[in-house]
Structures are given as structure tokens and as C-alpha cells.
Image 1: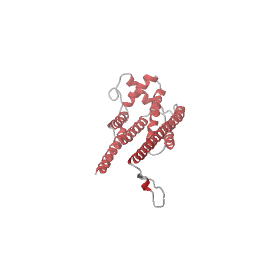
Image 2: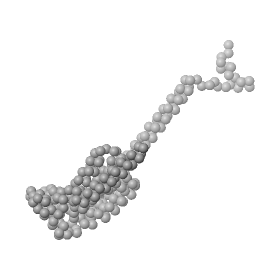
Image 3: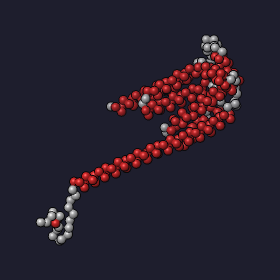
Image 4: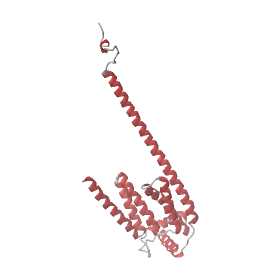
Length: 247
């Protein structure tokens, strides 16, 4: 009795393979699925490695920018003395260090918060005009990563580093006195970076950080209110944009 395989022959005598059974199809499907999973895993690993390398490049650029800025500004920190500015700032800080309060015990030309910061600088670095500039220099170094972070939102690491260096060259080293306007600039940039971070993660804590930056800026000099106005306009625009997206 002939088998079914014998019945598959054609009239010409050629042997034709039978159709694959369900077992073979199942094996092929599983092989294809496993291959797709391996390919997806490989792509995910490549993406992780690329992201890690990107962060390494960004950190290297930031480190180079910080080093250049610290050397450049550190070399000019003792230049450009104006007796009226440094004297007024130092006298207010010295009075606060001795227990007096601005606007109550003496006439303070600014809001008063800067005198408290400078009083702490006197306690840490000693009573010297240079101590105030060292304090401002430390805030300046903390300001550089914030500028770099904002620049990274619009360009790659190396161009962002160049933009940061330009911002460094055109700001604090031109007049490295511990003036309140520099602190307003620093905290406005900190707040802007916090708002941009909020756009990425939508966590309320970044709005809180942005608000604290505005409050501290006003405590240093009242023109910090301009930053508050800008932040409120940003939030109003964001709320309108989100509403349009949900319609």
C-alpha cells in the first residue's frame, strides 16, 4: 500500500514536497518572534549606550567650561574696585554681622537679603572686601551649569559650551564686585532652568524651586520682581497651550 508521499508525485514523475505541517509553522513563528525580541533588545541597549555617551560628552564639556571660567574670572576677581560700591556693601554686611537688622537699625539701600549673605561671607572668609567677591564668585560658579543647561535645550553639547563661555565673558568678570544685580541675574537663571526642567518632567517641585529663586532675588534687590513677572507669563502661556492641546 503506497503512502501519501507517493501520491504527491506529478505526471512527469517529479516529487513535490508536501505542505509544511502546523508544527513546522509554529517553529518558524517562534523563531521569528525570538529574532524580533533580540533585535528590540539590541536596539534598546544601543540607545542606552548612546544616551550614556551623550551624558559623558555633556559633562566633559561642562567641566571644561567650568575650568576655563574659574581660571579666567579668578584671575580678574581683584580688579575693578569702586570704593562707593564695595564700601556700602561691606558696611551693611558688617552691621548685620554685629546683630543689626536692615531698615530697622540702619539705612539699607537694597532690600536687605544681600547684607545677610555677605555677613555670612564675613564669618566664613573673614572681614575683608575680598570676602564679598569670593562669595559672589562661588554663586557665579554655580550659575554656569544653569546657563549650560538652558543652552542644551536649544543646541548640542559643544555649541552650548561655547554659548556658556560667551555668557561668562560678557557678565561677571567685567565688574566682579558683589553687586546685587549679579545675584538677580544668577537667581533668574536658576529659576529659568527650573521652569525648563518643569516642562520636561511636569513635577510641581520644580515650580517651587522657581518660586524660591524669585523670592530670594527680591530679597536681594526688588528688581527680582521682573523675573516673577516673566515666570507668571510663562505659566499663563503654558496653561493656554495645554488647554489647546486637550481640546
